[in-house]
Amino acid sequence: MRIAILSRNPRLYSTRRLIEAGEVRGHEVQVFDVLRCYMNIAAGKPEIHYKGKAIGPFDAVIPRIGASVTFHGTAVLRQFEMMGVYPVNESVAVTRSRDKLRSLQLLSRKGIGMPVSGFAHSPDDTDDLLELCGGAPVVIKLLEGTQGIGVVLAETRKAAESVIEAFRGLDAQILVQEFIAEAGGSDVRCLVVGDRVVAAMKRQGKEGEFRSNLHRGGTAKLTKLSKEERETAVRAAKVMGLNVAGVDILRSDRGPLVMEVNSSPGLEGIEAATGKDVAGMIVEFAERHARPGRTYTRRTR
Ligand code: ADP
Image (cartoon, rainbow, N blue to C red):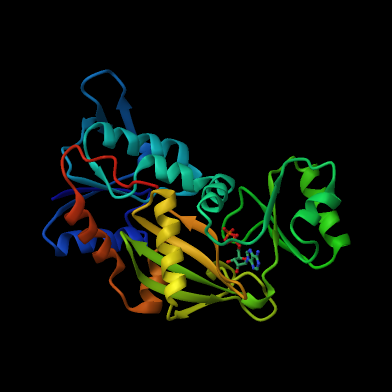
């Protein structure tokens, strides 16, 4: 097969592993920096140009689109789809997953467990918003944050009010969430490929930290999932329309609660923690499913 990888940097671990996994299986793999791709939108013959030349044909495209380049990245991915190239994750699913609120709304509609969440822009009734989430302690999240930045634990009502007011002053979109204390500063990252969880790791925040992000000094190790956790992760990916996803779950007293579904999950932490060849499984998934013109890849219901 001829495989295109959309990534800003071919030296990143995840990109390198996908190139390697493709080449080991005898495929021709090329990496494109989405910001350097430009396209024509004329009727009939969609093209993508890169460094002065038209690219293609390709059998499959593997998007690794960073949050900061979502707009242009999904436009380029959509252009691959217009050219009939099979996307491992479809552009519309990537866009869907990038909007935290939209994701939670879609997941809740399908009855997938999640922390009780409230969403607001400039709430004029902080009390009621807090009440909606069961009162303090609550976790307050800036919607555009990543890697745990802008995620605050407010242990008392007073603290919660101050944080909400401060964020309101910044004109920011916020998510107020029930704090799942029993997760004990840990969460579980489930790597879904197709209809299976192919690897899972438990991330534990450092002492005294409720956020488990590896970027914030958390550590990761292999964990065994319950049947309910597996099913929840696979369903969450399906609801988002993603074939490849990193589903983050909190282990709560009332079962697994989905926090986030990531469409370009990093491979380094999970491959190191589990010893699994996740990149290989992603390429094999593309081998099994890619067909010319098959660009609508996953039903979400
Ligand atoms: P980001 O997307 O920036 O990583 P998250 O929403 O994943 O932000 O939150 C970062 C971390 O904070 C999570 O990995 C988890 O460990 C912790 N966390 C987030 N929300 C909650 C919650 N409602 N209850 C308990 N812990 C939480």
